[in-house]
Image (cartoon, rainbow, N blue to C red):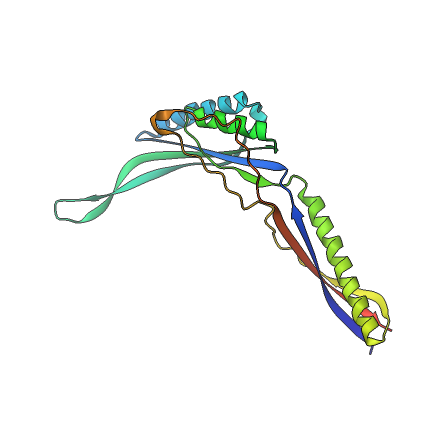
Length: 218
């Protein structure tokens, strides 16, 4: 029976965000189904115009989710019993733009959204654009880490590391998003704050990956 050594390698990387994903959601309500769709269309046109003013084309704005749902409210009758009463329809349209992280473009985009008449809900997510390259580098680092550990253990045990006979790996979804959060509230009175000069420095992104390697021992 061949002697073997099993080693788990670990790769880790600290990433500086270079990419922004900015989801925005518009929401309208109406008692009439057709009207809620018309209101949603008008809100979408306003949001597209806001993005266009920030330098995006219509093709840059991607739909993430679109839905029309009935809305019910709890109402108490004369006997004190609560029941669900139809209160109209709500249409929610979630969209997203993505672009290279520069302070000037981010500030310009936030400014445009804050001034948009559709009053979208929006947030800022900092990430890295080339995630596949990061995944590859993590695997390479995990492999190098495992071989180093195996060679160290073999040298300390007076044996030689033989041929690699098995690699076990299972990719799990990793988060490539910074923990930094950007949330903005419109100023009182409806004024639009100046945002072009704001300077955001997001936290670095820590990611890691593992793989198991089996070598023969000579």
